Image (cartoon, rainbow, N blue to C red; front, side):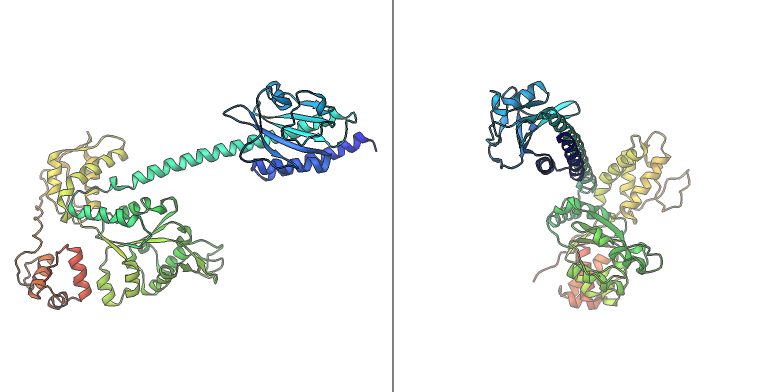
Length: 519
């Protein structure tokens, strides 16, 4: 068999291996080192070198060398027209020398080339522009096949160029995705930030301070408050202002699922665990690993399921339904409820150990009737948001704001938002005036008459004069204060007067914002 046939067979085998290498990885430096190794072992083209064009200076910078190490602190460079590589950079064409040392332009800066052997350099083109150079040296003197070998080196350089182009496209796509991700994070952070939680009252300022403090840590948070007070908004703000904001944020309403589905939803299940489980599935805890899990309506779960949830909170471990493998998860839990958990603990329907595990950092959201000074700002904020949803400007008049401020809002912020959305729908111009306000909880008032409002009473003083705790005319706050006064501010005695447990009266003191006297 002739030398030419042997050469062609070796080159074909090398091209196949080079194509395989280039298709396996987009790591340019690692890939070209393997390519140079194949050229040496399969075709006798040793001392391979790949240089890339520096986009800032336009110089050729040596990126990879086979059979030698490169200094990391001071890379080898070639300016345009400097040495053989610099000439190729300038003329953008392949160069094949029968003996490297016979050309005065040959610099051999790396000191690895034999000046008596041939030298071949081919451009690496990407998208029609020169982005690098592939240089090799045959390990035998010129045997008359230099031009054949030069064409082969050009083919390899073209394959490298296609790989580089794909790598650059993938890198650009990654950059675009990273920019889009960061933009979305900024948008979400703004959307779920404090700007969307409106309130200047003292009670809301306390909530904001608590949220800012607890956001820094991984502490479990229990958000308490009536339905419609914005517990989910607070949970969102805690996550997106915490160190876990780059991690997943997973939400689940515990009241929306029966117990058997709730276990599968939270812990996941294995294939065949129950009828319909055609494949394994991750639960919410696994999905939230490294981030935050928000469990709304935590007070609705059954005592049997509470024990399973307690294990995850205590140990950070779970097992999928139908599985036996124990998995560790790193999840911050934020829970929310409108229920009186203290009463549920005393009644035996809520585990006391789970209550204490959840109640590490309680945040109490005041109902809207206790902060009427926030209604005007809330109404204007909600009107702007409704306008964005409807694609038109929506404004609210001062007369409408005054009317809204006189209503106690038993449905809290959610009822206020529904009221304003109805009014905006009824407004042709987008201006909400007092005559469009309807707050009769679903029963439309007659068109000819305006709805009747009861003004909200001013909040009582922190500690009013002591009354009779048994007086049916007192509101809850006054009754608790009266009992505390009668009991000399001993909470256990006051609880007996009111027919409560010490835990229940402690919760009432906290939620009703009663300043305890110290003696």
